Image (cartoon, rainbow, N blue to C red; front, side, top):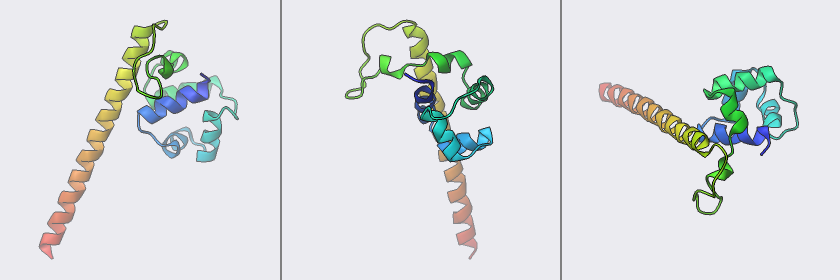
Length: 123
């Protein structure tokens, strides 16, 4: 698995858009897309920035291999893998981060709905 594929998988697990990551890196979405596709070289500095944005240690990004745990058809764990406990913990952490993000978004949506309800009640 190429580093761009790993970054893309982690980004998707965290429910981040390419636009969000690109903005955090100070580049265009198209430029970021080239990183994920392996069309642009990724410097160590950019990789470290990505690790901060994705809130993961750099080594977890480098060693991330989702296909060791989930096959594309049924999401069932595959056979034994090197460092499987470490990778499994990473996958769990990514899903927990995604759940936390979704809960925050739901809370924000609830606040906005309450705001609109209150404003409609005044009119």
